[in-house]
Image (cartoon, rainbow, N blue to C red; front, side, top):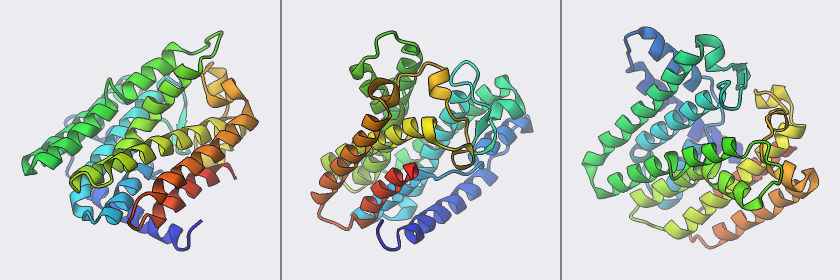
Length: 293
């Protein structure tokens, strides 16, 4: 991993968490339980990898952090809403998230649904607020909306549920789930700074984001088999018990690990074609792969 990677990651993370906390302080709801449950899940912590990607790509392209921050906040709110809903008994049925009780275990399933809905709508409000600033701001907002919606994450989640316990696993279906359920938001995180920079390295960053999303989901599938609760903060073995279609269920554990190495190399190759300082992004690929160690 690159020298000073952890330091730079911490800098991005601390900056974002500071801006996020400032934003959350402004949210007051009636009933107050709604805001409390929304903030509970957002402030459980986590790697904040999507905002970090945004800041890192933005720095490489010369986009100020202040310009990116509203999009980073909206992205994290959307991601958190998806986790709240994922954990519900009707979805992935998990009692823990980031080492703490899932939202529905604390506030009940009905309130958890509303907390997720509240975060999604709040994220869209943040994005709409940016759209008054110009066409590139509108384009960046639309990219996130599309990535989160029926042509992105939600489509992937729907396919994920539909193909539970399939008798004959289908590689094309798995690729579709990967690309949409996880990949689209990570791709959007790499694309938004490019859009805000006038489309600089748009094609390269789109493909990098797509491959990075695949890498992240591959490692997730493997960790569900051989990870540890203390490190992951969520239940282990859920994919198999829920009959999920995953890389491990389709290819096996060893072949899935090989795919991690191949996909990581693909990410490096794409970065080789970007003529600016993407050193941190190389390290980010290593960081995701290192989750398996």
